[in-house]
Length: 348
Ligand SMILES: [Cu+2]
View 1 (cartoon, rainbow, N blue to C red):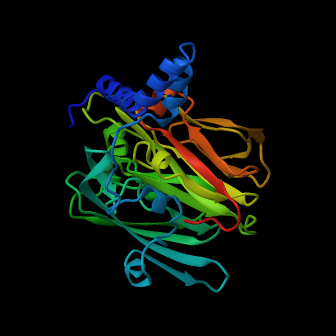
View 2 (spheres, helix red, strand yellow):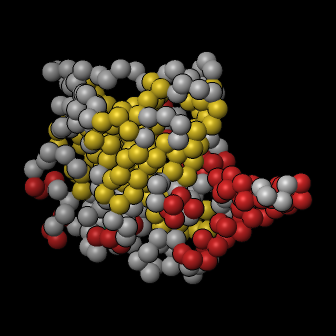
């Protein structure tokens, strides 16, 4: 399937929609000859590949709400993350990140030969508080030289960007710096050619919380990414959190009236910008998450590659609310999903 082209996938997506709604469109056409177009218009919201991705090794929904390996059992987590209080009230946070080649399923039956952090794309979400010490032991178990480049303040030798920073296959390097400033950041491989190393899957989210915590909220991580399955420097599949259309099939459950906070990061390669548009409501926008007061209230945010933002909102009405890239082609190729707002405590 790796030779599938962008255009043929787009056609597949269209076929999925047509197959799924043929009956509806037909019924409309026979009952009311003037209305069949409406049926197709609504059907566009359910388009996408037929079938499901196996979520046993990577579940986008679990990724969305996992911070510092919180999705693992205590015993498993210990192998990748440890936090130790320090006398000044801050914490030492120690991580183990491992680069490894792995084939991942990005749409039903479509596999991508990824380079991963800890076997997943995006890599695990790391989270510290402003002033904490972050120590990341990076092991390169992959087949190419890699690095980790963190966004945030750090000395040049921790930048993971220059030829002398390359970590060769089989070797390791320890990155260490203080978490600063608070905000929504990211980490990614900075080996050359950069666009290949990032696009292959070596990226993740790095959140730094302010010293005075933000109000409690239902927090979600959304990484806008794309996959060039035939290596023509153009993406054939787009998604939020890797699996095309996943949240169309499995809406993200949120609670009516509760504060919802989204950490949104754009790592899409080959396209100049990406965006998120939320239907039926507005959100407060904190660009880069580096302020405690929102800069804007909107329903659409556009981000360049490497840009990120924090979004806060409360769902007012019960039911499903679509979110998607406002670049229609990205949406049709996988970058669309649903929230489902429910009364009381959300069922996850
Ligand atoms: Cu790399």
